[in-house]
Length: 78
Image (cartoon, rainbow, N blue to C red; front, side):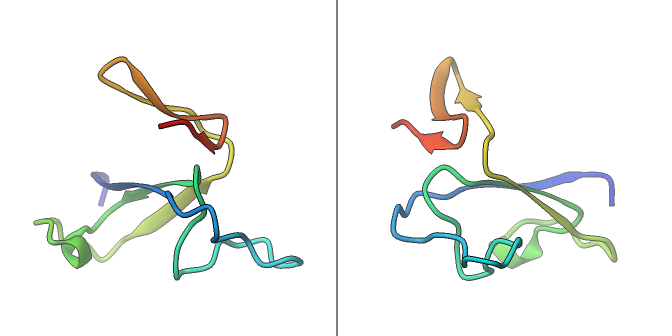
């Protein structure tokens, strides 16, 4: 239950949060939204099964991979 499971980065600029609802919709995340999951990842083909699963969504994160910035302060830059 304490394992990193998934890292998702939203790429669709047309998906936006629903006004007045503080949560991100399940159907997808707009460009630059970062979702980091811990627990299980079998839904996306991974080997981790757990009774615990937590989604953590970030609207203002910065993600850098191998020296290249992909998301900067919630904006998709590549």
